[in-house]
Length: 289
Image 1 (tube, rainbow, N blue to C red):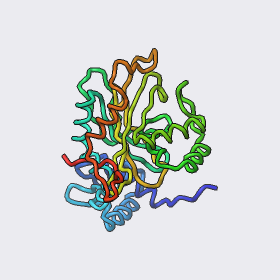
Image 2 (image 1 turned 180 degrees about the vertical axis):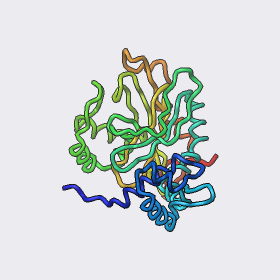
Image 3 (image 1 turned 30 degrees about the vertical axis):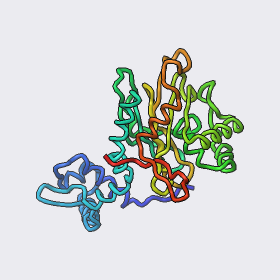
Image 4 (image 1 turned 90 degrees about the vertical axis):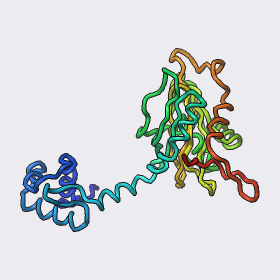
C-alpha cells in the first residue's frame, strides 16, 4: 500500500530545487511562477524554510540557506577522505603507471568511487568518480569487502543476492566464490581478471583506520578500471585499487605486466602501516599529504 505524501513538504522541496536555478537570488513571485504555486502559498513555505535556516533572503531575493548547506556537507563524510587520499592515489598511479581509485560503500549494496588519479599512459580509463559498483563478486574491491564477512555471513549474502555471471570467468557459484574469499582473507588483497568484463584486470588492497576497521579498498588499475566496492557489512569501508584493461579480443596478458603481488605490495607501500602492541596488523591508513 502506498504511503500518503505530505503536499506542503513536496511543495517546499520544489521551491528549494527551483532556487538552485537562480544562484544570485530569486523573488517570491518568480519562484511561485516556476513551481506553479500560488504566490501566497510560496510565501508561507519560504518563510517556514527561512525559520529553519534552509532558505535565506536578502536584497537579491531568496537563496539556499546555510543550514541546508551544512547538513548537505555533513551527509558527504567521505569528502575529506577523498581529498586526503588524492596525493596517495597520485603516488600509487605514478608507481604503477596505471590509474588508481578509492571507493567507499553507499548503503549495503553498492560502492561509489570517490577519488581517482591517472597514470602516465596514453591508454587509460574514464573518470569513475561518482560511479557506483554493484556486482561485488566481480570486483576486486568488492571481493575485499565480502572477505570481511565470515563464511556463514558470506554464504547468506550469496543466497540473498544471487550474484550473476558477467563473463565466462565470473566466480558466482557459491563454493568457488567462498574459496576465493578465503584466499583474499589469507593474503590481504583481492584481484579480478576478466571476471567483470573480458580483458579487464584489477587489484585492490584495503584502507583501514587506526582501529583496523575498513575505511576503503584502494586499487591500482592497469590501464583501465576503478575501485568498485560495496559494503554488505554495516561498518564503513573503502578500497584503493588499480586495474588493467587489455584488448577485448582476449584474456588479460599478464606476461606484459608486473605480477599481481607487485601491484598489491605497491599499493600497500603507498599507505602507512600500523601495528598494535600484540603485533596484529591494524591495516593500512591513508597518509596525510
